[in-house]
Image 1 (cartoon, rainbow, N blue to C red):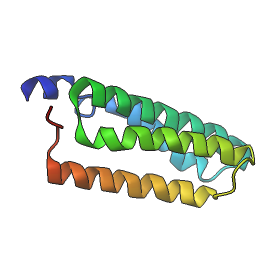
Image 2 (image 1 turned 30 degrees about the vertical axis):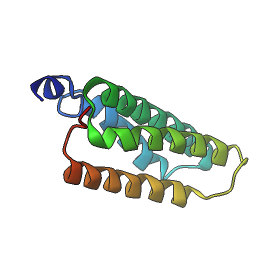
Image 3 (image 1 turned 180 degrees about the horizontal axis):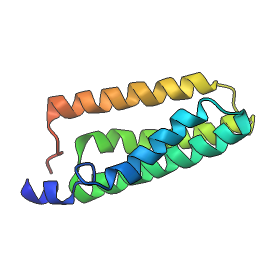
Length: 117
């Protein structure tokens, strides 16, 4: 497990760049016009999702297996919502993000920090 800990991006200072900035962009995007929200949320969810997918591949972090794909789907939903191609509502995208992260960390707590081969 030591090699997992050494590779885990969540436990490094880089987490603020990889997930802190995207999180701030999502929060800020909640208070701006839809056009800007579309760009902020799409970029933020894409960056956070890519970081989670990378982290799952690097160290097998349990919650990243859930949040990586979730964030990428939410990035697509944000782009489609902003373009008017779907109509699920921004609030539901935000709720999906919050609930998804909560579920992912709950699963991690129950199953362990790192997935086993």
